[in-house]
Length: 151
Image (cartoon, rainbow, N blue to C red; front, side):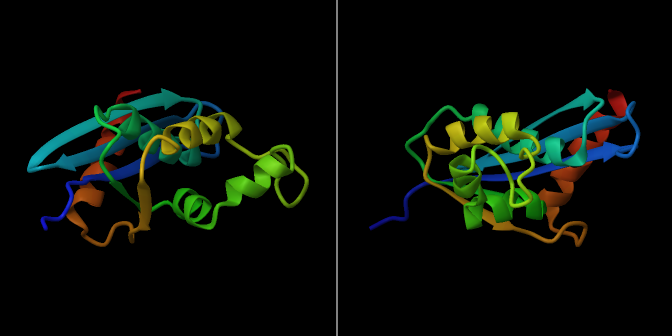
């Protein structure tokens, strides 16, 4: 029996001047399927690194044409991967989108958008080390930084 096809995504976000209100952020993703490669990227002003990490994943999933294939998402964002692997969002939803400190969950709009997309797929999230030479993660990072510079 042959192994089922799957889609591989590497996604990353970047933000320069994260501590300032007039910063620039970017996101990038590399998608692989059956030997085909697609690169996507974009940017925003007045954002955060966390928002760009989430946006990279969201935009990658939004660009998929099929929902019947397993998806493996690689990210160096502990924020993204830990939330999805450890299902933090389940507790957030039960608590009215409040975190353990009883504060509103940051980036709720993006988390809700991501969860809606994730529900359509069979997805596994994998944490990768950032900036250690993993080719496709480095490429997603370069795309994100390029997009941030252009914003």
